[in-house]
Image 1 (cartoon, rainbow, N blue to C red):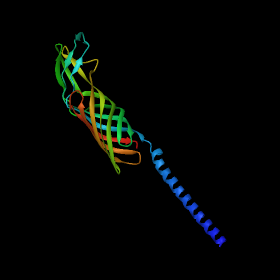
Image 2 (image 1 turned 30 degrees about the vertical axis):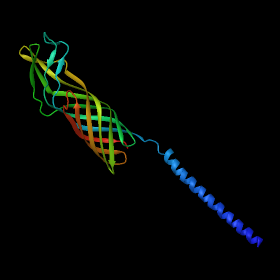
Image 3 (image 1 turned 135 degrees about the horizontal axis):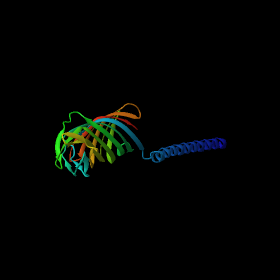
Image 4 (image 1 turned 180 degrees about the vertical axis):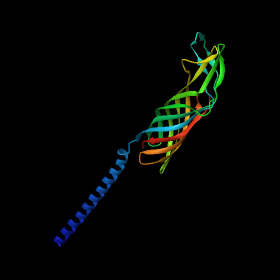
Length: 241
């Protein structure tokens, strides 16, 4: 009887110890999972680069200021302002960089856009300091520095949609010819105009693989040589998660 009681007691305490050990192990695993969620889920930081081709449109070119006297032949033309040459399209190429936080917030960092005039660009005849001037918008070019901004993005399977706004610094230029006797002499320097501005940006992207996407985008020029003065639209390739 005593032996049976000892065996039953040993069996009871063995089962109790096994149960406590199992419960302790499960609790430790659960604690590890929860602690892992805290420790192994840091904020996600990603980078992105992109290249695009675009139709860059200005609803109205800016006025051009001639700030220094210009020597044409034997005559010096004084300073003054030449009129806008009107609407202008450019074929543009751009690269851009972004910082992505938590796959939701995007912060454009820096990029550049280069473009040359395309499409119809009729000449504009004006005068400056009593001299006839022929402005040549078909020679126009543009460069823009894409400055920091902020935006948001959402993803749905292989699709991504995003929108942002950013600051820009833009310059445009074109050539002009001045009357000199019975002929027109090309200006020794191009006409330049520059401005700071703000652009919006919206895009829809389709993922090609794990790290690259192809996007259609549009960029309204919220302010650039004037309010709502044109925009850009084109095709963009992006690389980054």
